Length: 234
Ligand code: PGA
Image 1 (cartoon, rainbow, N blue to C red):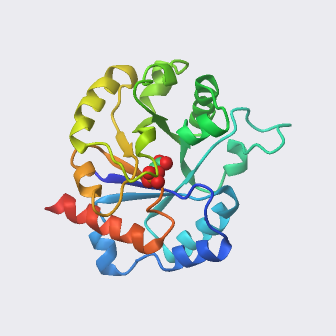
Image 2: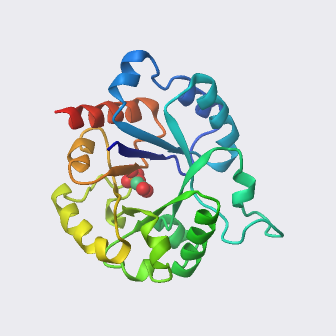
């Protein structure tokens, strides 16, 4: 099974920085072979999706696309919202939902997150549902069992996000155990200060990582990818 490495650029980058990152993403035969055990997923800000898709296709990069949010309402009169219809043909395969930054700064409720998940699933976009202890149950309580079982579950301790203070990798075994009965958690992602130095230890105990700070800088991110891949083969 490939491990998932999800790059969440959040609200960083302008067009020229996006072009630089994608045009310089390692793609020779050696690097392709080295990264074959990873599923790399990139969540750029919305304005760069088309550009990212074009460069990914042109260079045949092994990168899948994600979005950082999705409208709960579907197509229609919802000014400023981005619907699944808007994303058609952009080859968006994943959506990050319920991120603590959106719960905190945009007041997203668990009901809204559940509605967004239902909408994502109706467009065949895989939700990556972010959750934190001690709210595992509460944050997903409006999800149907079916919807819950179709999400990737990203355990994201708020204190670890952007702080350099990671969770102990060993704790993820207990986290998976706690999440499994609630979400039929088949795919557990960890997020919170993941970098090249610690990624391998996380991938030993979960199925992937969500990377914020270490993803907009291409060197930081490729260092992380090669460290992840090496850790999996050792
Ligand atoms: P971080 O962000 O890597 O900067 O801690 C992770 C996240 O927000 O998912």
